[in-house]
Amino acid sequence: MALPALLLLLHLLLSSEGSLSPPRISFTLNSTERPLLHFGHGDLHNATALLLSRDSSTLYVGAQNAILSLDVNQSDVIRLNKKVQWSPSDKETADCTGKGKDLRNECPNFIHVLQPLNSTHLYTCGSYAYSPQEAYIDTQSFSVVKKVSAKGRCPFSPFERSAVVIADGELFTATKTDFRGIKPQILRYFSKDGRPDVSLETSIRLLEEPTFVSSSLDPAEGKLYFFFSEVGKEFSYVDDLKTARVAQVCKDDVGGVRTLQKKWTSFTKATLLCQFEKQLPFNILQDVFTLPPPEGGDTADTLFYGVFTTQW
Ligand SMILES: *[C@@H]1O[C@H](CO)[C@@H](O)[C@H](O)[C@H]1NC(C)=O
Ligand SMILES: *[C@@H]1O[C@H](CO)[C@@H](O)[C@H](O)[C@H]1NC(C)=O
Image (tube, rainbow, N blue to C red):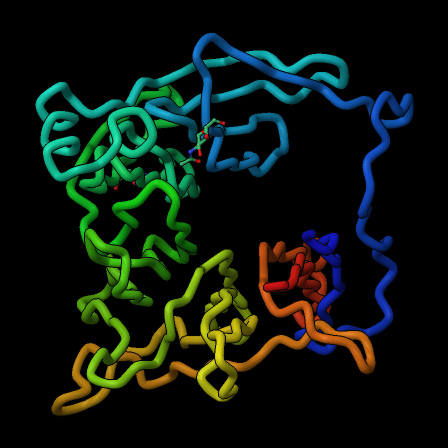
């Protein structure tokens, strides 16, 4: 039987006793204070990516073969603004099934990422018939403007997760880079100002079968954080013991010299421990949400909310 997930407030960055209210860990059905709104639309399935607009009036939803823009401004109803279809062609689908993948569960386009790129465009990537693609979406016309291969930057498998942060037009991604989903990477691409794209050195194993769940930018420190679970090689049990981690890289890292050209020189990782005294740890990270301080506040007051569960 699965233990209930434990919600833990992570004071990763030292936080002063803030005035923020504690996270809501339960949601009452039919509550009059905060009614639960439902939205359904035609053949909408697998809403795997969600993005709320800056002004909180629009919710972008990445679903199977489609991206939707929803008006969430009303308190009593969610309305469809626009929908854009983004599906593989019959030939691309046939190529996918030809590689032994399942027509209905693996060969559609499942959206992995939806992020604001700049003031006018969103960035998205999807598994696209096991041949990942990325695209820009013009938020005004709500159309897909440019599609290119995202191999190496977005997972092939619809069931794999990745974590993306966009900072000043540069993309920072933690993902699996290959068809089989065994090669993890943390990359910076679309690098600006003539600096090279940077990735993890792969001749040594810096990550052990990671499952990435989330990422965040610390603008004050110029750092990116990636949250994940991986096999904890420091433990020697019969079964692989998973452990929750956070990794960091510096936003402006340009790589090292000689064999370390275009490789992160700032990568480090640390364990996240969520455990009651004398009990087994909640060792698997399911998600992390970053709550920045109010506008103009001290970034040291950033809060990270983590949801953990156990391997057992
Ligand atoms: C946002 O990015 C897109 C894609 O690169 C580009 O076409 C567009 O001009 C950019 N918009 C602004 C306001 O920079
Ligand atoms: C899509 O949804 C179906 C039905 O809920 C589910 O069985 C399947 O695992 C989902 N696929 C992904 C990639 O989330």
